[in-house]
Amino acid sequence: MITVAALYQFTRFDDPAALRGPLLAICEAGGVCGTLLLAREGINGTIAGPREGIDAALAHIRTLPGCAAIEWKESHATSMPFTRMKVRLKREIVTMGQPDVDPQARVGAYVAPADWNDLIRAPDVAVIDTRNDYEVGIGTFQGAINPDIRTFRDFPGWWRDHAHEFAGKRIAMFCTGGIRCEKSTNFLLGEGVQDVFHLKGGILKYLEDVPQDESLWDGACFVFDQRVSVTHGLAIGNHSTCHACRRPLTDADRQRPEFEEGACCHQCRGEYDEADRDRFRERHRQFKKARASQGKLAS
Image (cartoon, rainbow, N blue to C red; front, side, top):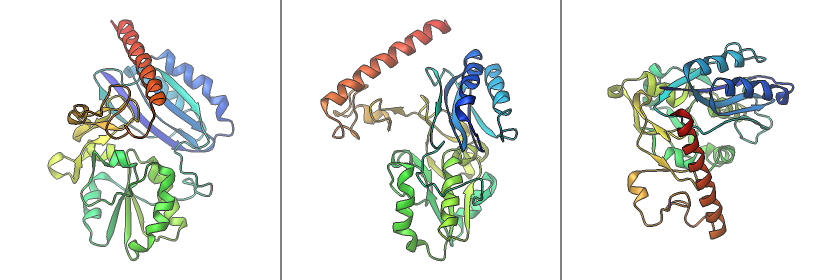
């Protein structure tokens, strides 16, 4: 059984580049794969591997500045959901493009999964899904507002265009694991919104903690690894992914005439030209080769 750990911590790293090598080495030594992002504002990512390797990686991360109390969310996979380990240096650990946003200064009020249903049922609360359109497309909370954004960078503009619609409302926001809401709630507070809340631990913690018969979640939750989606109890969903545009697909989507494995799907058929699709086909061939090599090493 593979352990999957999703984590983030907003903190101050004066020299993120100096942290990269030791972090990559400890992960690779423990058979851990995945992606971790380092920036001056902190660390973010998802890793997967054997229990001992994950424990060693987390122990190392807790030694980084400001990370002693880092929290993470665990789930499991029957096979490795990543092909290799990457530690990348970025300008932001979740890209919003708002230089004045600072989650370390203040954020909205955290709401535990056990208390979330009561909050979002309240008539004076507007519930906003801060995720990208393709994520919202496979699952969201009942009654949640979909901003229909392509990337998180689009959220500030969407809010400024629609803020007048939420006058007098308390705002409750949620995302996959909580990191986007650290920035979006700080942003709304800076825009003058008084009552801002967000789901502690994100959708993943809600699906883990709240029994299905009490849940207000409909559908599946998109995750950024080869499991593609998870459902209640963090069970693996039945979605696959388009290897061209990375959007989730159902079995029915894969039967559509626009679908070509590794090259395009009905959602992105018109977004790329044939040169792009040739590039995607080659990338998919390399991906399959890496997966086959990984399988041989495991056997």
